[in-house]
Length: 243
Image (cartoon, rainbow, N blue to C red; front, side):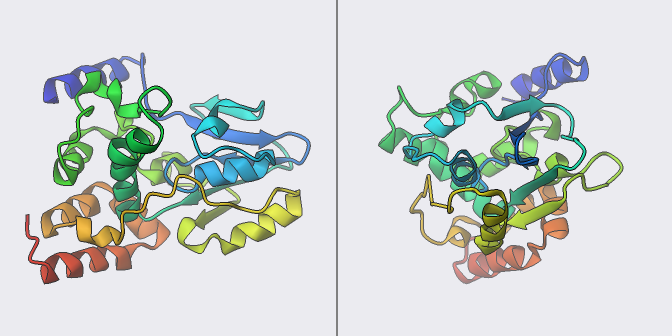
């Protein structure tokens, strides 16, 4: 795997390829744009903005005419630009369960968005356990990190450390989305892609919690998830999950 990562990174350094592409849903009539942040209620927000009765099968990601893909930040006079973030700890558990279990079980290989089948030459295709998944996330350089586990700070802040958004909410406090939906005439928020994996902190050992803190420290500090780190550490210590 390390050889594949090194090859992908060399390609990126040459300017050929980068995983860090920003996807926006832009409503040009209402002057509002949403940055899609994978595994942070993005399906629910897309359905709300499109105002459709979508199936719970990722189909919303492939329909509509409001999608904009860019390496840059969206900027337009008079636009309200927003996004949502999620705790790196629960986000990684959700990513693991979704891509290795939920999608394959409920959608089937022919329909599921099996992102890891070809990513990094398929080195992450097979489920090797949550701990190995966290090790992979640590080793993969930020520039080629998959959108489902990339650092959220890198999506929302420019290289000078300036936030480029009018509003950044947290999925743990989605009640504030109701005001956005009401102001711009979006549909009420519904839950999609809900993985029933129980308490996310039970997935972590002391080591893996520290790895997430090391890799996603900017997310934890910037968006206020220090308590989630302590929660993961307390759970691991109580359950004697050291490695």
